[in-house]
Image (cartoon, rainbow, N blue to C red; front, top):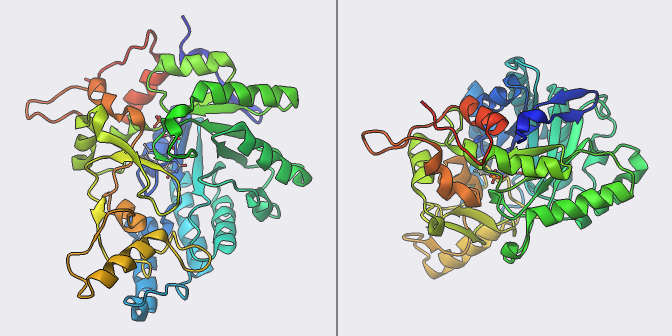
Length: 414
Ligand SMILES: Cc1cc2nc3c(=O)[nH]c(=O)nc-3n(C[C@H](O)[C@H](O)[C@H](O)COP(=O)(O)O)c2cc1C
């Protein structure tokens, strides 16, 4: 009977334990978590979502405070189009976040950064270009392009000296999205180094509509593998979404995948950025508590715990401080929803917004409890302590459980 450790992921001319820990913003997949994956010979992701804020918290910078001060005059204005990021600030924050992580790296694995295209920052092209190039400047091993089709993203990095040296990959949820990406980038003569195929059971935003339940990861993987074979493209495929045990992973590796990307099991790891109280909510969740809804202003469905505090919250938008989801015209679906409610309650008190959530603020404050479909199984991966709470396993324990377990077994932490 095979186990994950019988396989290796080949990237460039090196081999890795074929386990990637997926990116989880805002600072849920912390540097500490990613560093453990690299130390153990696999691949860890940090995320650059709200990197100015992450830098402030980790390195005592003042990017958010400075931006808030600059645009304070606009806080009561419904029009947010004038709130622009300073590209230099993004560069500095990103380089600091990446370098700080890379400097601490040990082991034979890799650290990648997850860059979501949907973080449009009121100037989609410039800000994405800045984030991508600053990540390469900072010495990141690789960049995973996510939450968007990224048709122009390779082009935005093409002049960087590390463009052909760093590992660059993309997350897709269909063979069609992959075909589109490859077609649009053909002229750059630079293929992705890996393709993550994320199915409908993943956490965070989904690359599916509200009909997500009609899709199945193994079917999409079969289509992607067949397409790559037909085109004679030797790009490792990484399966993601609902891979909960080493045996689940082996099934995809035996199908021909180069590796797996996993996240939900690690949301309750000691090194994960979620506050301890939130980790206990994840442990306690039952299947009915896990919902997919349209709360996210991005337009993508998102999976989260039903008791997520962000749902129904009518806080004043914080675009002057964050503003990561403002589209190229300063718009955001939460702003529209909030302003609609404000018009009904002009005193600004007791505002409840039921249809959308202020994702920047609530993700930043760990009040939007996004999670994978199999979160309800987390309680079976650990021990209950005498006080009724659940023990947080270490990232190393979870990683090795994926790497060495057989028979769908899950080893409990000591
Ligand atoms: C809490 C949480 C936050 C996530 N945030 C992001 C994100 O910011 N960007 C992204 O591309 N994927 C995100 N994901 C998706 C994961 O990176 C990963 O691909 C997926 O969850 C794997 O499926 P699994 O959780 O069932 O193992 C998130 C997942 C979770 C559980």
